[in-house]
Image (tube, rainbow, N blue to C red):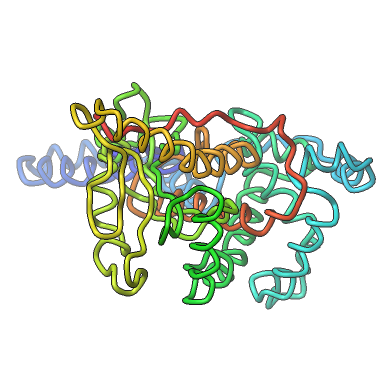
Length: 387
């Protein structure tokens, strides 16, 4: 049962009290005689009227007031946000998870989006400020990405932090079809030529792997489905990238208990392969994935024990390390993906978490030419698909 705020609990309690009194009044009226009614009118009518007035007043103020007690306004200052923008390059990069040049390039791409325009006369905060707030949540894990921490660091309230984050996500996701793209025929030919030259796999378009996007707490909606074999809660995300570590396809949303094989079979790539592959094109994958016309996984035992297959598995793993590095960079730059501080109570919350993941994947692609700090790198422990 959903938890009610104190104000709603009070209103409900008052309504129960009123209904109870009405029922009791009707019962007493039906069972009393005229003498009893006269006694009630002379002795208790005044006190009962006073009590009813008090109840009515309490209910009125409870329904008209957003908060039962006086709000305590935490001191806020824009000085910290100002200092970030005026800081040296290293400090700026640590906060924004990108260089200053890349940051304002992102601002230029989303700055004209309608979500940053108000119909009212009250102007929004500048787009750079809103983007910095969102990045402070995407880029850090644990309490560092919480609404309170981001708000206190940047001099705004928790509700404003949430609003800015949603606006930035909405603006970025409007560009998703131009940022996370499946390669066209010409691009596929170039990718295949590079991979064959550098890694020896002809007709290969790239690499696919699954990654568990952690959740800070168990979802209240079907929480057991999100529980992984590693003893934590997560969302499964299937990532496809090319040899330049550009993410070409993201399929996120299955709960953490899901096998990589199952996730892949429900993806667009598996359901409509002719739209994405032609000729003998395929992706390299680990042994959790099924053997098919478009997937070439490593050999499982006992086939992996032969000399030829062992050599092939070694070359296969050396090539496929690129997707592991890509996921490591994604989670390194945007460390909120290690354990999302989002409460999943319903379908809408789940969808928001998926949008969060896709937004970070978009930013990864937008920042491929931006200098990556190796100190951010996260060793993704991967998922072999087992439960």
